[in-house]
Image (cartoon, rainbow, N blue to C red; front, top):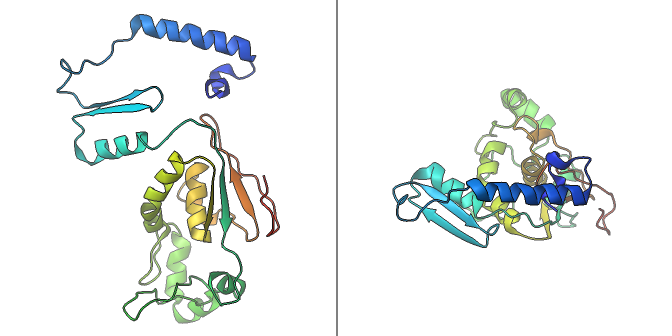
Length: 231
């Protein structure tokens, strides 16, 4: 099914595509030269057997090679669905109540040692009045801008990397998160740029359905209404 969605077989019937793909495999067999565990032991490489059933990593050195192996070991081609939903409303004055009042951020209860940004729980109007330069800097580069003592979208993307890898290896899953986190996840799965990420639409009372595919874009489907999951 993965190969049938390949651009190579766009507009071609299933039987024709399967026959062509099997013929390609036979051609590969005639010229394929596998790496030898002894003769090629000085090389850096990773072997993937049976679409991820088994892995063999040899002489993996340095950050880039390690991250490449980490990524390859956490992806799969099994069809799956990822549902994304923002947090629900609360009567306790939590994150959603802050959103309804137009205030940014919002922390869980912190101990006296907890650190929060100086703009925490302020409205944009209040920030404009007290820190006009900060809003100007934010408008210049919303992806990399950090509120004072806060973090940027770029920081959040780095912090979310283990979560993204976990989503890559999962089957069907529902993720409930705040808007900034959802934007980062959408940007990854929809292949959006850093400039687009901070402006992705993530409305409340909406569940986004992502269906990752091997080729082409991954389109979200949306629906409104707190009681239901929409696809």
